[in-house]
Image (cartoon, rainbow, N blue to C red; front, top):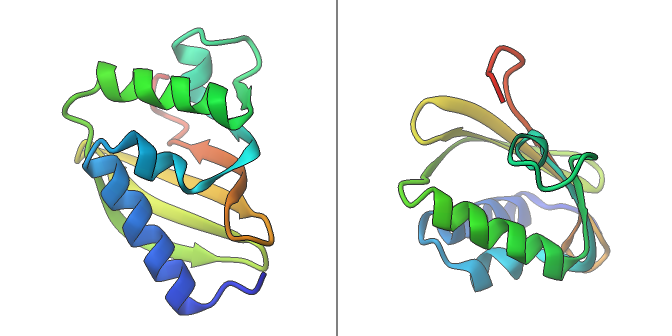
Length: 124
């Protein structure tokens, strides 16, 4: 799929809103069934020893637990970056931690692979 400016803006706005509203259904609407998701927080929280989750149902469990553990979680979108088949959202997490999510999209515009990034000097 071609990522237009309008698609990128709408995707970013909806993704940020879903997280800030703590709406797990709206969050998961962005992800494909066979999604592969990697994050340093998967390692930090000892979900597994690879830092990667496979499949939408497992990702939903991980995100639901993250929302439960972080009732004050809030994202402030700073930049939207686009590639040929990916979007990177750069945002502040809880007002202080810079973060970036790179999402590789499938032809239907759903996240097939998600990659979370945090500053190297943050103790994760």
